[in-house]
Length: 125
Image (cartoon, rainbow, N blue to C red; front, top):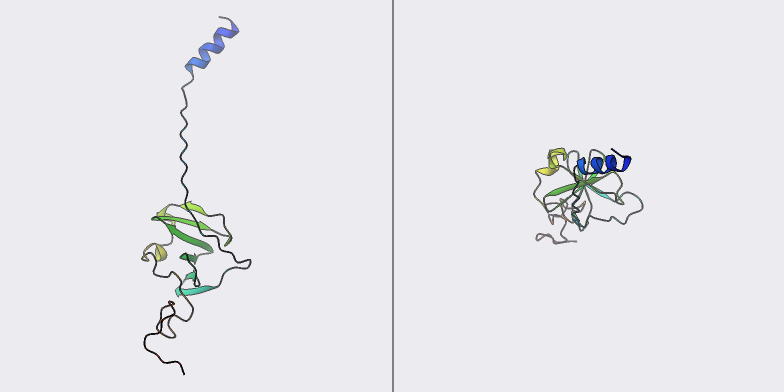
């Protein structure tokens, strides 16, 4: 066999490789603080970014966010989010109902408003 014929046989013997490209766009939070954002401790070992549009948790040195039942994490509060399998997410935040700590403020227990700016019948003197 000639060199050309050997190349043709080798090419035909190589299995075809199919490529599939799927683009998924998930808007993840962009926290616009140069320094780490202010946090509120919501339970032992769990903090949430204070009064923020997204529910961004801080646990075990990672920032965590949930989008459409999928979890993402980053070490840098400014970005770099990566998908994480649910089994790798701390159970302390997986079990939390979505939205429970959205817009949470440090004074949520002080006046009974739970961080939503409405007082429950308390008068300010």
